[in-house]
Amino acid sequence: MTVLYDYWRSSASYRVRIGMNLLGLPFRPVPVDLVQGDNRAPEHLARNPQGLVPALEIDGQMLTQSLAILEYLNETRGGSLLPADPLGRARVRALAYAIAMDIHPVCNSSVARFAVSESKGAITTEAWMAQFITRGMEAFEALLDHPDTGRFCHGDSASLADLCLLPQMYNARRWGIDVTSWRRCLAVEANLAAIPAIAAAHPDHFKAEAK
Image (cartoon, rainbow, N blue to C red; front, side, top):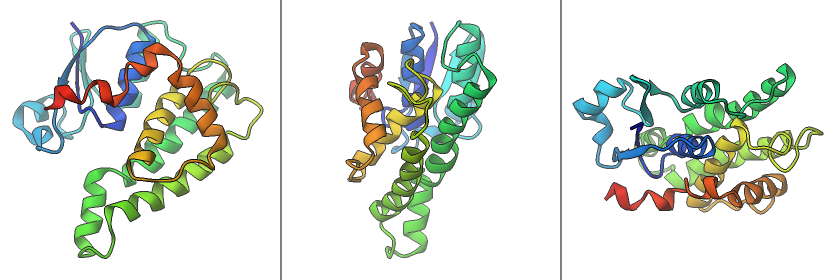
């Protein structure tokens, strides 16, 4: 059985759950509680020395980093998370990276905690998240103003970009950010949420396992 070591609220884990569901790959979720520090325990560091989630045990290997995992699954399981044409792949990767490599790292909970601590509370977690998520997602919204945007971020089938967008929208709401002006993002989000395999990956379905 394929095993996914994840945390229910982790954006990176959420991405991989969506991808695996879309590809029809069954997996056993094993919670790694980031709040309790389970990710720093020796057994998890043996899986991923970075102490991050997700880690995916599959094909006799332990894979880390959500986008690398998704590209591996796409290549080995005949997926369609990346377009067939080079320009399409470049656009989808650019959209995915705009979230996974620009917004997500600076909004990692450990980064926000450090900012709050070093500012002695002058910066709040909510203010930190609002600053960087809002700025990044406003740019993402502008990137979707493109002729290749369809029902989803690129065309009419879910891609790697969509697997990054949906968790980021969840995170924005979690931190009380007003998303109503992100019209294109909201339209794509609604189309994604209507797909049962994607809806099944939502954090709410995995919260109980983390207790």
